Length: 205
Image 1 (cartoon, helix red, strand yellow):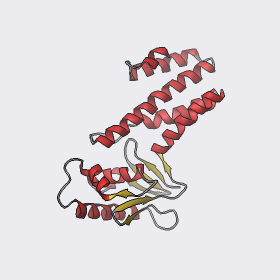
Image 2: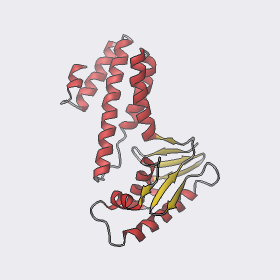
Image 3: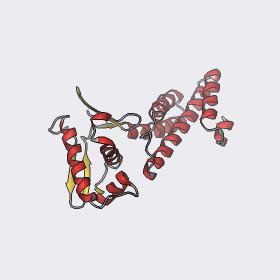
Image 4: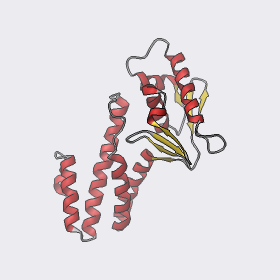
């Protein structure tokens, strides 16, 4: 099962094989890979990808540059092996699509699943399960996202991660209170307040 990390340092694991952030084809290759991963559910238009990579400074020969960048990224991914479990980038007319095995793990997706599951378990009255999922969401969200980059889509994804982090802290406080661990809940609530002192919910908890 491939494991893909886009929060914190980028990495791709496939069994004993590993592609590190520095193995990806430069800054633009990292942006292309991350954007493809986040939008892997469907094909992405080439112009959308160009805007994600170059923002307002799209070069005149962007189409040729994008094709070359995608080819370099494909060569990097080829080091992870081939076959049914391979990771590949498919080029179609005017668009690209990332193909991942059905079993692939993506940390970004796991964080979103975890916070939704934590919410659900709180609603069902299962503080232990809620706490477990909240801590998964918190750990992933705390890693950050593409540090040093400031494209609008990156800032938007950081906002989503921050919201996940804060919600995970809230679920942690709530779960610990339900379990009777008042001192732990207080510590977690103070951490929540430190993360966002202007958030009304932080003061409430």
